[in-house]
Image (cartoon, rainbow, N blue to C red; front, top):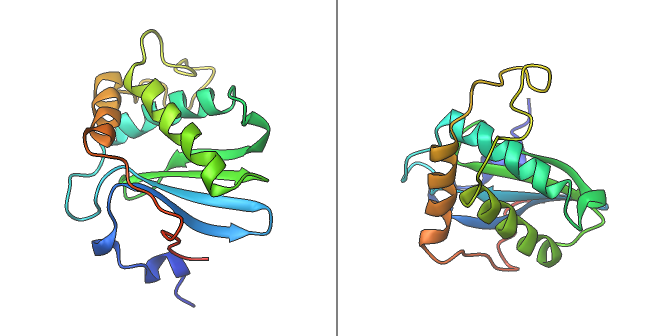
Length: 151
């Protein structure tokens, strides 16, 4: 099998930040790197699940809702993918930042955390999700137009 392009990116070089992962016509995939791979601890899966629920709910209720295709964690637990249609990189960045600040400041029940709404509804950890989102903001958020990793 051919090696996929994302495995050709040297993950030792990645820092926290927002990158263009790939473009497919009008579809843009963003790599929202929450930690430095292989250098900082990965996210706790329960925290990632919580960030997924809150972030997806907020994004799908935001001004860019009609553009959002997917928001979910990477299998390596070092970040999230945001897949959007008809939205460019610069326009998406403020919404990614706001989604993570919403998680950081969340109070109340976690959206979709009921047995009829989620296949693993008890697999959540709000304090760790808030902490991980805060960790994202402790250092200046880095991104640049030239941070295109693979296309």
